[in-house]
Image (cartoon, rainbow, N blue to C red; front, top):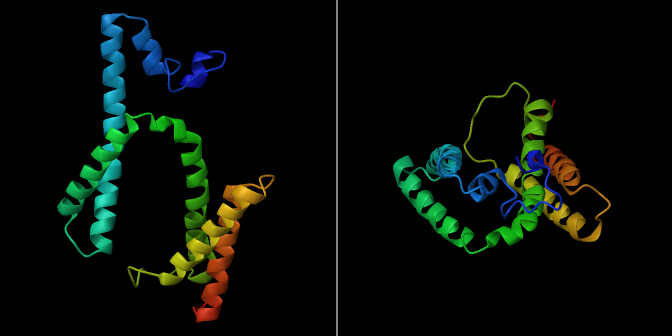
Length: 177
C-alpha cells in the first residue's frame, strides 16, 4: 500500500502509509474508514496467529489451548505496548532475524517429506533431529548475514538447514528414499 502511494522518499512508519495518508487528509469519515480498515485487518491476522500459536503450544506441551491463548494473548498485548514505543525503528533488523530463523524450517519440512520420509505418517510429535538441523541452518545464516553479505541469507539458511537434516537423518539411521 505504501508503494501504491508513490511518495518520494516514503516513510512507511509516518504518514506515508495508507492509514496515515487517509488520516492526514483530516476528513472525518475517511479517518473512521481508515481506522476500521486497520483494526479489522490487524485484528483478523492477530486472531488467526493467536489461534495457531495456542493450538501448537498446547499440543507441544500437552496442555489446554485456552490457557495458551490467554498466555500468548497477554504476551501479544505486552509486545504491542512495546511497539507503541517506536520499536518500528528496528523493522529491518526484525526482517533480517526472520530471514535467519524461518527458511531452515521450510527446507527441513521439504527434505523430510520428499527425501527422508516420503509417504510417511505422523508418528511422533517431536523430532529432535529437525531442531538440531534448524539450529545448524540458523547459525550458518547468522554467520552469512554478518560476514558474507554478498550471499543470500535466506537461501543459505534453507540449503544448510535442509542439508543438515538430510545428513543427520542418514547418521541416525532414518530410512531415506
